[in-house]
Length: 426
Image (tube, rainbow, N blue to C red; front, side, top):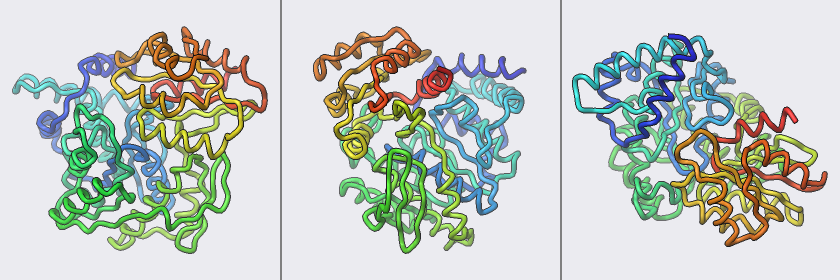
């Protein structure tokens, strides 16, 4: 199997969607010899901030000399971004042998049982095989949807469970209250592991603390109010936390919280006998890269991309707009998935924009058509236009924007990589 053939197979399997539950992934990994049991995991769940915590934490561990695997989804810049060791993507010529191996195991599972193996389960198995081959000291693992029944939760060698901010999302799968959603996400807590969480709203906080007690897992609350922002711009910020200063090249008012969570996670790892020095923490955060999270991809005019795809992320984006761009003329490019609460996202953000250009996110059956999105946007801001392609939207935004104006592209992360390439090549 060649790389192109591997991608064709994975694209074919992806058409069957995703299913919550662990039966299929357990059977698949059993056929593969359970590679996950040879790895140590740092497992991250939450609604918003998982990726930024993963990027900061894995970057610092890498600085400290630990061979660190990272597995995350969705990706922004390219398919292979989801499989990384020490910040390097898996090479394309490495993928096909793992896909062949997992494809064979998948066929055996489906022959022996009535189970269907999803593409996320296949990719998770590939990741575990890859990280075992690379002899990773740690794997920093981002949960997909929820936690309890997410395919990543097949692991039982968790050293540390981490919780980013939890809010309302995926309600049809996870529950209609914050407590119900937190209960699902807290399913990643394992007996005797350690827990670090951002300070949550009370309903979610009570659930995490209760489930931590039930598993004998000591819980540390990372309180972002203890950190002070010393300087900031849309290009990054410097914070002081517990007497140390940290430069973070990530904008967004929420990045302070994510950094504090990562630093508390490292303190717990120190206590467990896996130390990192102060300078390694500083260098790891100073060089962290996490695309698509209020990221500047052009400076004149300022062009920002952000994955604000749910109400909580829209609140964060709105706060960042108020913080960095108050009084500026703003042009949006917006594309969303139909199964998201995009009306709430529009309601929270549309009033900031002078013009809004809508697009349909490409090559995804979940994408909302640009015309339908524009129709909903028009209920909140009449200055909206549906565009045929991402390239058309980018060119129109540049034609509308003066040097002092701001373009913000947001919604689904799925189109941000393509949009970044288009902007860089104009």
